[in-house]
Length: 177
Image (cartoon, rainbow, N blue to C red; front, top):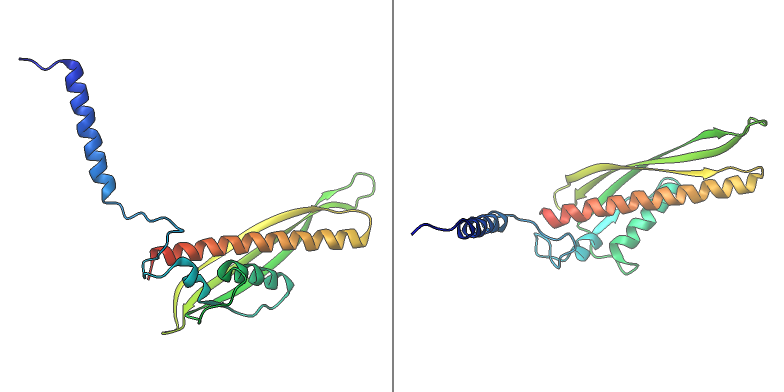
């Protein structure tokens, strides 16, 4: 008896589905915010064990403050097992010129942060990287307005850089150790 074309197609689909299931079952994918990391600790406790180097300026302090809150949730820090050495480099530039007056009408703030995560037990650098973010702001005729707009833009770039670093370190702790 010959197999019908419809029966053959169903059998082939079932075999492909089972084969795909076997392939996917070999993956070692783990959710980033799962309950435990590779070391068996929670991601929150791993992050809380990171001490952050002192800041050298106001913008770096903003990044540091955001990271501390992200790592501890505003609670007490755990005993330090890692040290995050953070360095920031901020630059500003004008990019809009008002017609007629020739004054700058818009500017941007760029922040680059480089970091190294050092395991304190053996002083080994376990991961490093950098993060970059830019924010623009509108300039007006008043000096205070411009100063405040610059500070707000600096705060925005600091928060975004801190979020990126926190995500990268979360990925490290979820996948390594």
